[in-house]
Length: 355
Image 1 (spheres, rainbow, N blue to C red):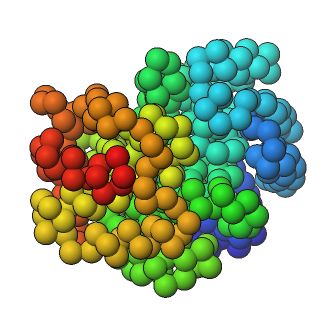
Image 2: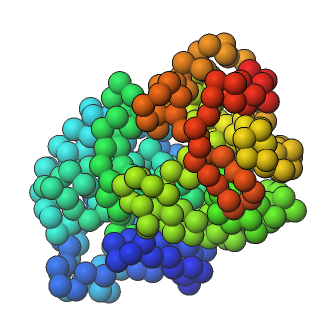
Image 3: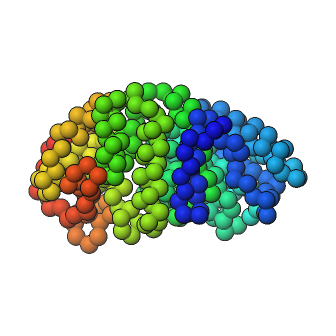
């Protein structure tokens, strides 16, 4: 399948955006050929794409590898249920059973939870084996699969993890186009965020075309933003913080109400827009709100006690010292800033989303 876009993060990670699964699916390794590939996938659509990936890998291997390549499939639970140390141990047992060594490859096929889990397993098995991601949700394609963060949940979300890029991320627009509308809408929240912080043209595209926008263009632009930001700040010590736009309040709302991540980020961006208007003079808070609503995303939070939200914000992992974390705000589309906020600022944001 012809590649529409190839985006590199240094020399470590290649992101391919194609109509279908790219050929070859796995990166060539003539000097250290792999003998085994383990495809880690989830139920539903991810399993179907996983089966297609298994077939593609086998076909590619028959044409490019001198020796046979054994391809194995490991099924993991859906969504966040996959991201536990118990599931990690289950996958380790399968790797041990198939005698996966450091020359082999682990392929994560599914949503963000699948690529997070597969990436963590690949990073820790035998001190690191090659990982390839095939995201099957828009949220995974534009966010979770890009940037090298892997992790599983313990007492907190992503409490155990490592920073490590996959060797390749293979994004099939055809797969994303087949998503049910709710999953497409959820992913648009993170895609819009990429535009708001670094690509005003993407904001314009989503504003004018909404869900009818070219998915190839939306994905390519959003992926390019995240790739460029993370390339310059892999360990999140500086500029990478701008990717947290909408996440300070968004994570609190997600935890308190259980709404999907993309919806929570949308609510968080509305709150951040209102605070930006107060703190930086951001003139487009209402325009941002209208774009979010036009994509079918919420602009108000489900009911939750304000003290609970305030407490969750105060415990945000981005907090440095004081009682409140620094927040990513906007001076304009494409001009993010990281600033200290006060309780009064936060109250303005929460009021803007009905809390």
